[in-house]
Image 1: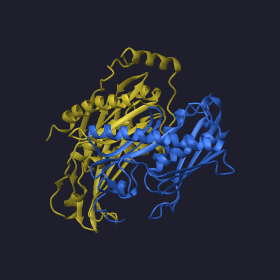
Image 2: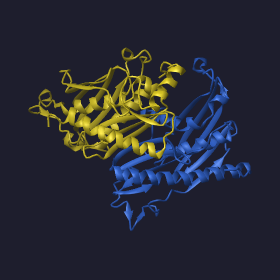
Image 3: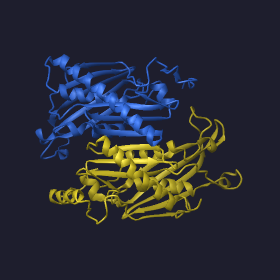
Image 4: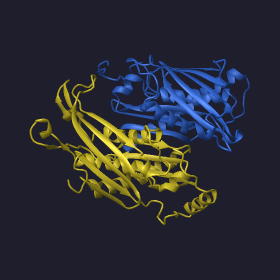
Amino acid sequence: MNESIVAEIRKDYMYDLAKRGERVDGRALDQYRDISVETGEISRAEGSARVQIGNTQVLVGVKIQPGEPFPDTPDKGVIITNAELVPLASPTFESGPPREGAIELARVVDRGIRESGALDLTNLCIEEGVKVWMVFIDMHVLDHDGNLIDAAALGAIAALSNAKLPNERYDMGKDGQLPVADLPVAVTVVEMGGKLLLDPGLEEEQITPAKLTIIFNKDGSISGMQKSGTGMLTSEQIYQAIEMASNKAKEIRKKFLERKG
Amino acid sequence: MKDKPEKLIVKGKRLDGRKMDELRPIKIEVGVLKRADGSCYLELGENKIMAAVYGPREVHPRHLQEATRAIVRYRYNMASFSVEERKRPGPDRRSVEISKVSRDAIKPVIIKECFPKAAVDIFVEVLQADAGTRTAGINAASIALADAGIPMKGLVSSCAVGKIDGHIALDPMKDEDNYGEADMPIAMVVPDRITLLQMDGHFTQDEFKQAFELAKKGCEQIYEMQRQALIAKYGVEGKQ
């Protein structure tokens, strides 16, 4: 992913701003952009969610269908997570098979869903060794204005939370709700000139060398982390990032995921 | 896959007799390949890793060149016979991600401005795997870069920490990784510049802190071994 180049002057300007506690778009360092989550937009999908973080837009669709379990986990359902950085979302995205950016995105989101235990896979077994539910989480990036990971992760858990088990289509009784046990939320922080910024916009993401995503469970524990980019972070910065992100994750979960519960 | 051992910790010791804060034995050989500009063979317990560096050399394809500095490429690859169940040769999603985060971990120490328009290529081959291959790969790659004479700001040292049967343990081996509750590889330029941090599983925030501090200690030990291996090869006691 060869992102467009932000002029050096602009970069200096943004670093100077950060030192004074300001950002190009007028946000405070610990201020997230506006978030919106709409679920159920795609009726063909068993679950779906469109997430917007500022101008960033990701549409996540969940398809659920019966399939064969993996031989080493005959009594467990299957989660398959995929992300597509389609060319309509950015001048720098190209068509073709997923590259490392898309693969990293999908794998980080997958880790959060899997390790938080959001889906109890033994619940998704239909007949041991023969038939289990396969849950496909497909993340379609529509507009890339920075911080795709948080948007995709929020979309994934929101789409799962409103997903149906399509029993009727396969003659297995009435449709049910897909049981979701935890609500992992990913929050990303970047480091700029010694300061930490929450929810990087596209320009910020391009000029900052180090980015840290932390995925929190309901109880505040951590189910996944990923440092990305070629920068270095000190331990102090990492601890600070966790504290910053932890509060935000709670807020996001409360506002966008728990309202129905 | 084998069944889960009943206990991963018996009387405060792990299945291979290690203490909770103990690394597996590490063996390092510097400059083991003739054709590569720099190379390193590294064993971490049962892991056997070969790393090679080519470069600085011309960039192909040309359009990848950067006018003011070298580009750095990193390929992590597992041999098909390195794991119990044969792995289909070639890159899969896991190795693509590992290549990316490993490159992110190594790149910050390379002084790329020394070689405009050139490429530094790092190849890591996992010959035998037993959990912790990405960390072992980064350790070997870092030494191979030094062996190739690439100017660097420091060595990158890497190790993982896990949670097994509820306890934080340094450098998990395969069974501990498979049946453990969390795994967190980190890489660090000693002292305290973190260049890789990944985690999956379950940590409370306190456990994270404990695990992170332990992993840093592990990196410090590995750094010392990397340094000794280079001194042994080149016979010069460098100044710290």
